[in-house]
Length: 86
Image: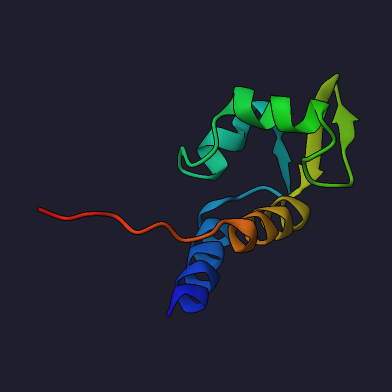
C-alpha cells in the first residue's frame, strides 16, 4: 500500500510539472512543499542531493527524472514512526 502511494505520488508530480528540469530554487514547488528550497540546498552542499547537477544561467538544476528518483530513494530510507491518535 505504501509503495503504491509513493508510485502514485511520483506520477502526480510528473503530471503537474511542465518542465524537463527542476531548479534548486523551485524544489519546494515541485514537491508541493515537502522539501523546502533551503533544506534542498543544504542537502546538496553535503553531497546528499540528487546526482546530475548542471547550471542554467547560474542556477543549479537537475533533470526532473533525477530529482524524482532521488526523492523516491529518500522516501524508502525513512522509517515509519507510530503516531498516537486521540
